[in-house]
Image (cartoon, rainbow, N blue to C red):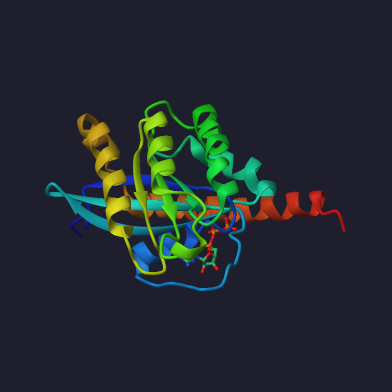
Length: 212
Ligand SMILES: Nc1nc2c(ncn2[C@@H]2O[C@H](COP(=O)(O)OP(=O)(O)OP(=O)(O)O)[C@@H](O)[C@H]2O)c(=O)[nH]1
């Protein structure tokens, strides 16, 4: 059977709990929005195929838990990421300040050539906004990142930010396109395996850290 894509790339969503990582992902892959916050446990992923400059790119997007207690587990996945979306919530100043911490974790654990962009989500909540667009722009410039304000709720800039990051990764890996073409079935089955392993580890570590 003919392959349905030319290249497989791995992207990852990072940021504090509640900034809207899962909602960004659902909006991008399923054009869906969930108003309730169900915290991601450990790590999860979704796939979508894009066509960029004539190349069919299958993106595997890893959604990580923002909660501190899962970070030992999620950090193990950074080194496999080719592109990272660092997400904060424009209504939550603390999540914006924490971007420095997430960026330093990426520096420490992700491959040197990883591409990243800064995303200020929930920009539909203008009245509750605590972080200005200028602050976002300034921080992104400091790190040499592209910057997008998004709303998973109103579907603003969602395709744009995922597509831009995919383009950056694609350009960075252009020479190794052939090497990046993986067997999707192999990759998915091993990803599924990893998900199971992660859930188990997360449950174990949650048991160990539970204070009640
Ligand atoms: N107004 C508004 N609310 C949003 C938006 N995106 C997400 N939310 C809400 O924010 C809450 C948290 O969203 P999630 O996507 O679960 O957050 P998360 O970053 O994945 O959280 P963790 O899994 O705990 O790391 C939910 O109640 C969402 O409905 C947005 O663009 N606008």
